[in-house]
Length: 150
Ligand SMILES: [Cu+2]
Image 1 (cartoon, rainbow, N blue to C red):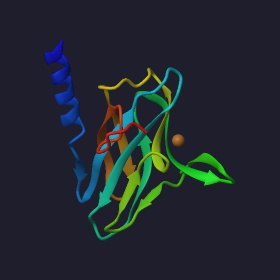
Image 2: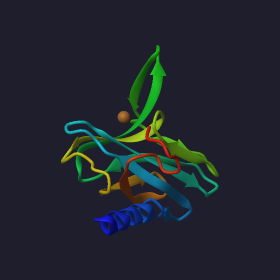
Image 3: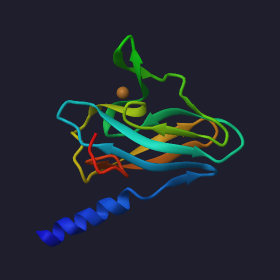
Image 4: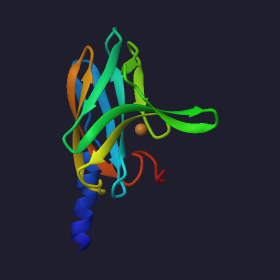
């Protein structure tokens, strides 16, 4: 049992490491977290644009949910709301776009089954310039690089 959990931890550690690069647009530290039955889930990652032209994250797709959207959490009149980013989200030339809790995120609605820590899910991100980039999101218990769950 002890050996098994050590092996699982090793797998989780390695899964959270890879970056996905396509040309000079890079996706780093993709992750998602466990979800309750019937609840939606959110995905987070960082896009770094190493080109000298702006790009736009247009769309997200995946087979594990009925609907996948780009959202931004925003405080509107004292209430936290999620705004569907229908026109996509820009990544400035030489800049970055950070999807994180409380900000931009991928929204997964109508999950085929709840996300469980240790699983991985693959999404396809569509960029205006870079095209489609496949990204694997590990289900983690806490944000990578932090030692506390949010
Ligand atoms: Cu959302």
